[in-house]
Length: 249
Image (cartoon, rainbow, N blue to C red):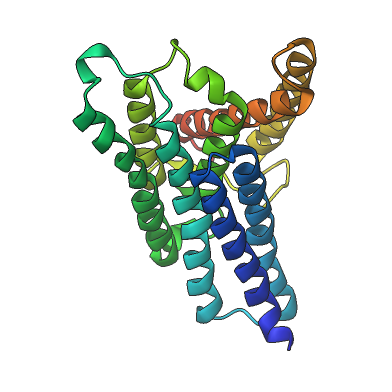
């Protein structure tokens, strides 16, 4: 029985992704965010459970990638897909044809997520860190941004061009050759930047909670969820900066 426990946890991740996708297509962004976050929780513990029980194998690896593709690829794509119907369109793009075509570009996120997962499975360099943005981080970024800032994204200060270019940027981040730090080793000597990052995240989350509490149009929780998107953005920026710094031998 114990050999099936990690796969059961992985299937829970997959089910969360399916539910998140359903919620996203029905504009239930808060629920979609929660199920993507829950899927990330299961994704974190399935590998840990497999190693603890000594039952790691190729089946679990393939199942994990398939589940991740749904939860961290298809589900955020579905959220972006529905946002394309809500964002503002500049006058020169405001035609029935463009409005019909643009939402389907959201599934580029799913395609690049699948490509990133396939590369991860065969890339021997990614045992202690990541090359390119991890799919859970990408999914949590989009889910937290859309669920907490839906009205702002649909407002006059944002439009479909920004959404499309932002999406293309994250497609590139998924498959780029930029090293991004992971939290597999947490010693100060080997990963000072990780502790600095976690400290900054704590500050950002507290600031988000305060901002949400002081804004009559937001709640404290919405402020923290929006801050979470900022934490993911900070992760990308710090990883890009760290990749350009000289390595100490």
